Length: 137
Image (cartoon, rainbow, N blue to C red; front, side, top):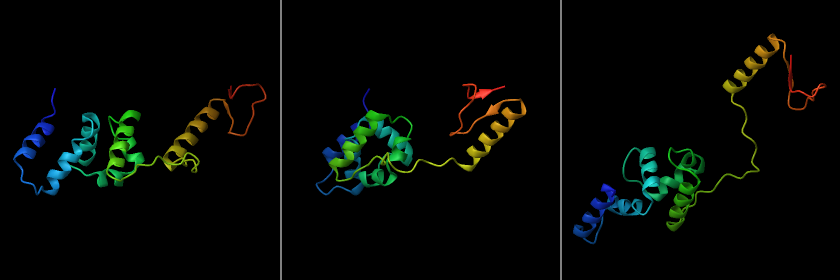
């Protein structure tokens, strides 16, 4: 199956004068991405045309979380950005661990309370169970 946007860009390129518009240049740049990654980014931007600068501005985590982008897709997007002088750096794994959001913390506290109400002993991270089980009734 051919990509309609690619065909249109090729036809336009053949009939377009030497001074291309910014949108025309963006279209040809976008068409250098594989179809799956191109469509995932189109979905993020909610438009068919975008620039490498706009993709780089999204940041690693936003691109990583986009629907349809896995590790291979992320690698393809990163390589595409590097061709245009941009970088999509992965966050440093030694950065501080993300904190538990207040809603998640509340849910955890409610679950612990429920377990204790029903006779379970719930231990924290540093606690060690005397009987060898993390939960006991």
